[in-house]
Structures are given as C-alpha cells and as structure tokens.
Amino acid sequence: MSAHTLEQLKQSLHGDIVIPSDPDYLSAISRWAINAARHAKVITFAKDVDDISLALCYAKENKLSLAIRGGGHNAVGASSAQDGLVIDLSRYMNQVRVDPARRLAYVQGGAVWKDVDEAAMQHGLATVGGTVNHTGVGGLTLGGGFGWLQGSHGLTVDNLVKAVVVLSDGTAVTASANENSELFWAIRGGGCNFGICAEFVFKLHAQRRTVFAGNLVFDAEKVEKLMSVIREWYSKASEKEVAFLTCYKDAQLDKARAITFVSVFYNGTKMEGKSKFKAFLDLGPTEDTTAEIPYEMLNGLYNQYYEPGFARHMRGFRYDLVSSRVGPIRQVLERLNSLPFKEKNLSMTVMFEYNSFVKVNAVSNEAMALARHSLNNGLVLMGWSEDTPRYMMYAREVVWEILQMVSPGQRFFTGNREGFQYGEDQDHRVSSTIKGEALYGAEKYKKLQRLKRKYDPDVIFNKWFIIEPASEEENGIKVRL
Image (cartoon, rainbow, N blue to C red):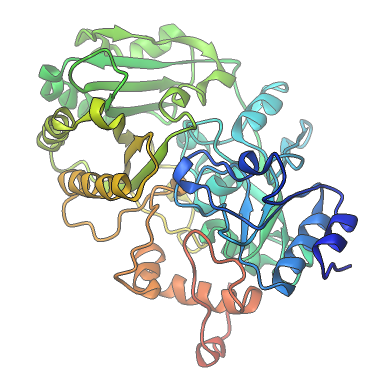
C-alpha cells in the first residue's frame, strides 16, 4: 500500500491528517517545550501500524523530513519536523493493555507514563517509569530510563521484553531477544535511530499500593549539614530508597532566594519511610510534604516543576561522590540568586540524583547498546516564557556556566534518566563519531554504525542523537551479538 499524493494519503489513512490551513494546526504542532514546536507540512495522527507505514513511505517518496511524536517531551524539537511530516502517535496509539497473569504490559508508542502507572496498578503491578508522568514512554525507554523503582528493577530499558518496530522501508517487525535480536540490541539505548516503535512490551513487578514520598525544604544555611546527611544515608541506602537534591528558583516563587529541597522516596509505609529518612527530618526542614501516597501519584510529584507552556533548555551531567558537593551547591545557589528571574520570567532547576545502581550495573554492558556507568546523574534545566533566539542564547550561557560548577571538565553533558533528553544539544563543534564514542564507547558505536547502515542506510530517522551509518568498508565487518 502506498500514497503518492496528499489526497491519496488522506483517503488511505485510518487516522487523521492536519495541514497548515486546518484550524487545529497550531495545537497539532505544539509541544511540551514551546521552543520545540516546528511548522510541519503534514501531521499524521496514526491509528495503527499500517498508518505508520503509509505515512513513512509518503514522507520518503515526497522527500519530506520525518519526525515521530510520542510524548513530545524533547526540548530541541526531535518530535517535530520543519516543513516535513510528523507521525504523531499520541492521539490514538496511546493504549495500555496489562496481562496480569504473565506480568506484562503492552504499551503503544504514543502512551505516557501516567497511562502505564494507572493501568498496571489496577493489578498491583508496576515497572520503572521515570519521575514525571507526562513524559512519553518511547523516548524514556529507548534512551535508558532511570526512575524511582530502578534500585529494585533496574532501568526502564532493562524491563523491555520486546517491541514492534516499523523499519525505514515501511515493514513492521518484532524485536526481542529471540527475534531480530540485533535490532533489539540496537534500540535499547540507540534511541529512534532504527525505526518507529509502535508498541513496547514491559515486564511488570508486584508493587504495594502506597509508598512514602514527598519534599523536604531546607534553608541554604543548612547545606553543609544536609550534604553530610545525604552522604551518610546514601552509603547505607537500600534499593527501596531514593533521594533527589534540587536547587530551584522561579519567577513565581514567593521566596526571594532560591530554595533547596530533597525529594525522598521509600517503597514502604510512612512509618518505615520516616525511619529511613530520620536524619533528614532531624535537620528541621522548613517545609515537609512527605506522606504515604498512592503509588500512581509518585510519578506526578515533580509535574509542577515541568508543566508545559514554557521554552526549555536542559543538559545532563554525571558526578561521583568522592568530592564534596557543598562547594558546587553553594556556587549554584549564589548564581541562581543573581539571575533576573522576574525580569525574564525564568525558572531554574539544578538536580543531583541519589539512586541505587546495584541492579542497573548487574546487567552486562554488552547486553544492549546503552552504556552503563556507576556515576550519579544530574540535571540543569532552565525555563522561560518568551521563545526568542535571544533568550535561548542566554539560557545556553547560564546552563553551561552551571554545568562547569557541578561537573567541571566533563566534555559532553548527557544522562539517561529521561533518555537522551538530558543531553539535549547536539554539539556541532565535534563530529558525531567523537560524540558517539563518548556516549557508547568506541566498539559499541562502531557496532551501532553497522546496524544503522543495515536498518536505516538513508538516515530517514535523523532526529535526537543521530548515529552515522558505517561506510561500505566498515560494514564488511560481521556484527556479532
């Protein structure tokens, strides 16, 4: 089945088509970050795999750049296509089906994590699903996926059993450990370089109905004591405990200065949680929102800091716990307090994450494309309301400045808690190969290049982090899995 003209595409597609003259065009191209919107020529809201294949082939035949929209949470426009075609899975292909007997979730490519959390918890089950529940399932999974449950169950991608992938020629295949295993190896960490994931199948795990979680806000004067408590706690923390330290300020905040808060999580009761985080509570937080909450609410705790409707610029970093964090955190707070938040309507988040890596690093580094490490992840994120090049330039400068404070000397700032979304910028000052080797390791990147040549030689899938196909000579080396 093929469509050579837009009219033929409209007649053949089961879903919807939106073009610039349609009244709902602006809403169709809108994204979580307003600076990620692009003016596409055609937006197709796919209803099934046939729609995906049809739209993909139409884009190729008409030489239109292609983008895939799942959750639309990427801040640099990876789910948008200027003057191109967008295959949008969010309107119709957002269903979740749970098989409680086999403990599997069948998740369509346009679903967000809220959909998964709620469907699975109807059966007392859960999987690792990030920390913001309006994030798309696809982006987080294909880039790795850290989350509250990683200590117990590893990364999101470690829980991926199989996927239905539409390849660059329009055919749909199943990728798993037993079927198209080389493709399965590549998509787990290789992002959207190899095809369009129409469906994911995840392992589910027994999950209690309520958990202990919330925020503890501390005065800046207590940073040194707070870091001492964090280090002591983290040295003994179980796989069921998580803490995120955040320095935050925005234009609407009632406080004159930036705030420091710790988001805590324990997969147990309120009494158990308060015991696990007693040292934090003994410091005397100025605010304490911790409580025993339904599990489904857990991944929504951070939503208020990541609401849609703002321009965003974010970068990830990695850090170890050998050096003290007190100095960098004081620097960050001082810099945040000096920024013109009211004047520019800014928000700023600098986050340090403390999760267990035992299950994460129990998986072999060769098991999939994703590179594993034992360093902690962090995030620097700026938001603002006026989407102009001037503001973007300002955001880049400030974010880069703060990155140098928290992780000096790091060449590429990435992380995979929310997929590659933490490494938003593509640094055009260096070649893709140099960056690819930094992200994956030299041998893995070569393997990914060979698989890119096999599955997408024309680089149809060229958003997010682009893997360059191997040359003919390099492709002569057999790929061993």
